[in-house]
Image (cartoon, rainbow, N blue to C red; front, side, top):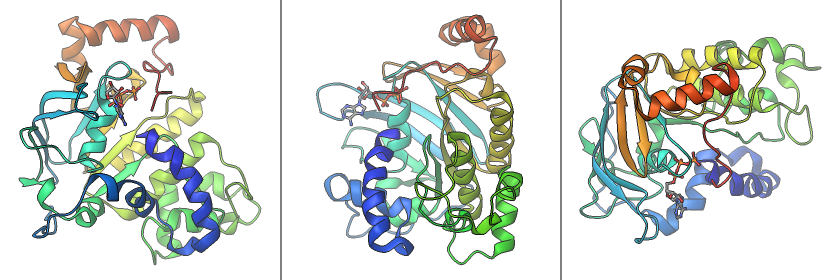
Length: 308
Ligand code: ATP
């Protein structure tokens, strides 16, 4: 997923100088990705989200038609539940998120991705993306006020709603230390935010957007313990009541996920809860043992994402 945000940062810079008020991350993502990869069908309809249940049904995908990124992947994210993706670099975690957000369409014979029973190839991208909130590893900040940066999750949000979202995202206490509070300019030409703070801004934005489905990409960079705790609390507030798919690099952060999928070479090698997977004594258990031995179970990434 990070691959989408690198160019986005550069493009975002150009866009900010052109017309800041019209910029929104997902529009930029569409500009970057839509024309080449995905087109709406002539008879595309709007996605109707009821429970927000996600299903991958025998999904296989290749970026270049030679190497396999995913092969025969099937799983469900039932209403309001949290599913975490783990596995070594290149295992296919980001590909699952990209396909659900429809940066690429599955080819004929490549299986189906359904939301509340609707094949996402048959719905408009606009309606699909309106139903999905994305919290990337690295969020784009506009050279504007912190209130603007949070508020564009939902244009027209009141200052009270923005503050409430910031509180829920564990960011309010930090914002009130800024010279002009919520009016303080942030970004390259304002107050610089740390990676953990930017991620909480993204969480606040997404809380305002209030989507039924969430895609989360946990930051790989090591965070100090108190930042880590703040982010975990913010994420708990965000994930509650929504169907979520997250890429996890720190196994300790997903102990409470409803289901963990362990990917290996584009396939689901193991699945279960944290406890079940430890009892299985397979790939997950050995990843867990590695993390415990190197970090005491805390903030060490299991995967190198520099290739994204
Ligand atoms: P990481 O932990 O490093 O983020 P990942 O599990 O998210 O890895 P994916 O990015 O989903 O892995 O990659 C799955 C496979 O698809 C890998 O073999 C990767 O090299 C390949 N791949 C990913 N993106 C592209 C692309 N844009 N073009 C071609 N191949 C790609």
